[in-house]
Length: 117
View 1 (cartoon, rainbow, N blue to C red):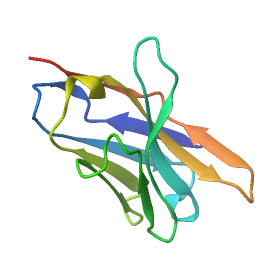
View 2 (spheres, rainbow, N blue to C red; view 1 turned 90 degrees about the horizontal axis):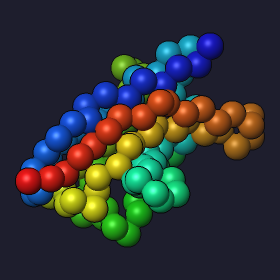
View 3 (cartoon, helix red, strand yellow; view 1 turned 180 degrees about the vertical axis):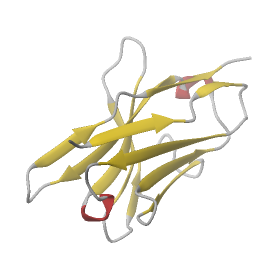
């Protein structure tokens, strides 16, 4: 059974930083495109960042230059370093593991990030 467990969310002031972690079990993340998505209250889930199995990263325009996605395949974990946080970054952040060829698409339950003074 594949599980993705996010951690690291919390309350942070504007301008602050957080690092989210997503630990995978029941599979190995090295074969997947790993991603972070977020969903703010009353809004649709949106892509934040993805990292392919080859290491290429892609970011939403709203987080470019502030967020960094990284993956440690040896630890079976993916990270999202978030700097210069803004109130509009407030959302539940979800981890995703996706493999197009094998038709696999797994999600974590999310971790809440609140940016407020």
